[in-house]
View 1: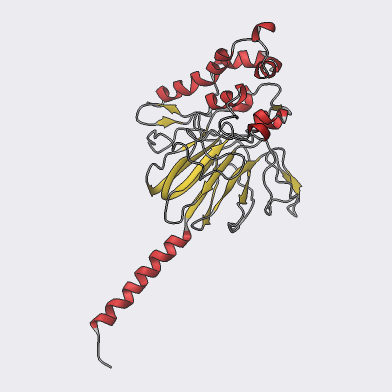
View 2 (view 1 turned 120 degrees about the vertical axis):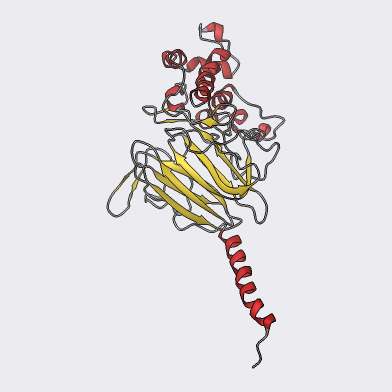
Length: 342
């Protein structure tokens, strides 16, 4: 049989095409990093129509990492369960973010609020959409960073310890989580349902503005898309729980996508963070959680005045600080962190 140069070239070409096709089908790698003081148990929920990943829940000890592969087109959410107690058979429950399965694996069940969520939709040849959401409340700081990829690919998340600043009417237990106003009051104007089910009728509340001031890049309520949705094409993602030191990367501040609802996977759509802007980048500052004066002021208040104010009451009636004073407590230190890491 004669030698054909054409046939000899087609063989390696077929391997190249196969390699490129296989890379496209692999989608993105998600790496989970635990910088908290103890173990967390990440939970994973794939959206309807998306395949389950290799696990739906696992233990992540302090200062460890674990990576999972997701196929192109996958969409779903990640969160951290805390205060978990599982026996040798894997049966048990968690204090925050519990998925109700009674096991380490969540098996297709979502997180019980309040919980900090990271949400992703991996594009099929187009942009990935991602966010960090406080719409279902907050249980710990979380940051999403991107490696590789093209486009904006901005880091995002929430690094403020909101639990230490949570108003009394939103606080859970001993302060290990902070409810959203929707979860706390079950009112349509807070939950953006019923007569408030559109962007025109559901507006930011005093509570969502409090979350937004603490974590400007996070979803604070259901229609907070304009400053909370981020995109990247072909990137890999690192989800860090309790980031406690400045990022090793210099991540430039990029304006979020405006008006996009493509990333909305449930009660909200994308990410945010108390990242102190420093001109060339921002530092993560979970080690501190606000100015001493602001933090003391919040701790001295029982929080009940905030509920009255949100429902139309007057702060003067109780002698409580004005809203601007409250919000300033959540915004002073994020700015200071940017200068610290310059």
